[in-house]
Image (tube, rainbow, N blue to C red; front, side):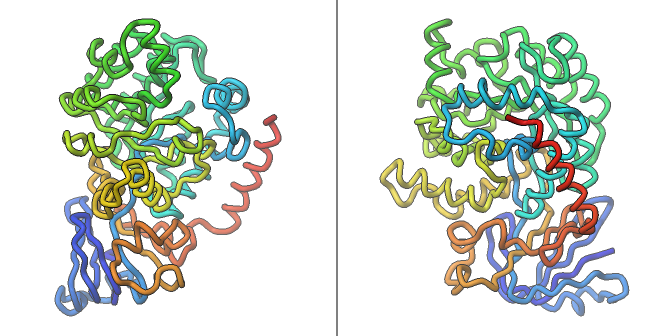
Length: 427
């Protein structure tokens, strides 16, 4: 069934054009979602109301679906368990010991909760890295979101297996199984240069290349890991990854905080994509600031990620857009840096994950903090937050309407009860 959103106050499209007092028609053509923007579309398109789902767009702004290019959604389970800690202590003392207690079922429910949180905040596509990938993929499909689900690899193992060779075989099997899926894409995720050997990285790259998938990894998140590599092998992480043949156009590097201008040029040379996670970096006091200006000047494709809910502590990309803009203005002493259009492009970029962005998010403008509207794009970046999302349409399906999920309250309450039981495991 086609969807008609009538009488919208504003529409911002993925090219950042702004329309006022228009309708949006969402229809399927040859299994692809097509968006039509215009006035009086019911008459102009000669539509029959019986063939339509009609949504009232009064006092609303429509925009493309948001994209979260680096996260660990099952870590909703660990939200609030390890705040105000140094990263290495955060990982070694709190996160990894408690993650070891998680089962497949736990990760499924944590993924479902994370997926609902993203949907509620207008995120329609995301890039994931966490163990028990099969359960994450299943939850993603059930909700109806678009996701790249990366199978994680760490040399010392994950809760799925302590045997590295077994993990690599499991990753390849997972990718082979799901490589032809439509709304989810499998990928592989060697954790980071300080947790994966050269052999691990090159094997992961071979798998990614063979099956035409993304390789998702953490790069230069902290000064500590960079200095350790320099001391041990006389190379910084990006130089090292280039040296072993990993840097390529199918790589998404998360964080990239502690990198030099020369490293930025290496990322551009190899067409590596970067996921910027300013909220998490600031909370974990990574210390540096990702060189956004240099990256954009060199042509590096930069998008926005939240990181996991244990280090952010939410999955709100609208909030992350404002953080991105403010962080770089403050860091550079330049209010023109991180401008509205730059940040919106970063947040709308689902193509970085291989998904066409024909999803629609409606923001409710009936709130004091969103009035008046002198510049609707400014209101989105600097004034809105995830709770202003009213309706979300993914792949031509309404998944959230009037701020309510398509799942009933009974189902949601069951999810929340499961989450409550899981958290009793942690210390």
